[in-house]
Image (cartoon, rainbow, N blue to C red; front, side, top):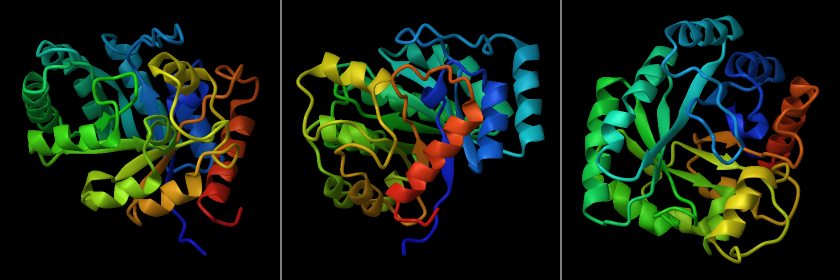
Length: 273
């Protein structure tokens, strides 16, 4: 039997739930970590109004402490150009206040030299705030696939920068779970998992975006090779459950949904539940 892993509840799984409530839900459901979307989400229309509000951030930190949960990541830094470094400062400050291990960043700059310089400077600022940068690749970003993302991260040459792989994005970008084995294990301290209908690459970037935001399945449902994806990760990699189900961004019973997602994730990982 596969050894038990640690799990995180990603905010996108129920994005409308306020971060403080999500912390309590994750803890009560049995997760070891939670992740928070603290920047506004244009794709979902949700803004929890934490950044720029010291009282709101302090309340969230208290909620995290009360729940006894750890914060795996906060999001998101959009690296469109060098100005992203200064724009990210409030999010990095929030990450430090919450004790977050990583801040998720996306690469949205097609300039192959400039984006590496931006990431390098972002890593320096993140280090000053005691956190790391997890660069996520998606078909609808400038880091469209695993190989491109790894190249960018390795070129930045910063010890606190890692690659954030997602079982959906690997598949929809034309990759395979075994591709993870081609690269140094330390690049993958954690990963995101979900299920989805259909296997193989997405039709186009917009189709991938829509599915990723609102139309995933539980980790052990659908056609993605989630078990193979998990087995290709390092043994200690944390699994972040990012499974936004259609129509359930604001579930009536968040704890019930979070508990079901965790049980599904454990089944996908080959653990008994």
